[in-house]
Structure formats: C-alpha cells, structure tokens
Image 1 (tube, helix red, strand yellow):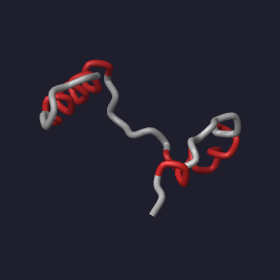
Image 2 (cartoon, rainbow, N blue to C red):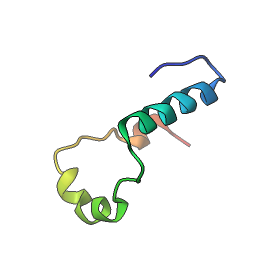
Image 3 (tube, helix red, strand yellow):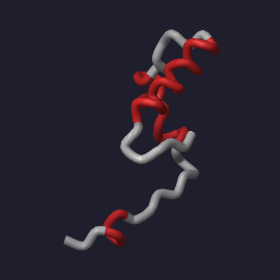
Image 4 (tube, one colour):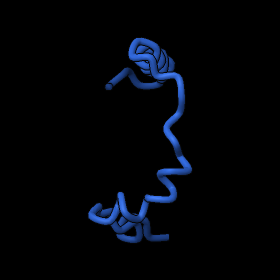
Length: 55
C-alpha cells in the first residue's frame, strides 16, 4: 500500500478494514515464530548495517 506523506491514519484505517473483511481477529503466533525464526530465516540475506551507518 502506498499513501500520502504524513497521512498514516488513512493507511491504518484501510489495513484495519481489510483485516475485518477477511475475518482476521487474532494476532499471528509470535512465540511460535520466535521459536522457529532461525529455521525460517536461514536463507535470507540481510544488508550489512555497518556499511550504511558510520558513526
């Protein structure tokens, strides 16, 4: 979704309406993801943060 600058409330309202429309009433199981995150993210490549921020 793309919205106007400084108008996050419209995007949040749209996201909430989408959740209601599909019947999403619960949050995803975060505990389950955290227990399996190493397996889930094994093939992901993340940028080197030190490359972009040199303090």
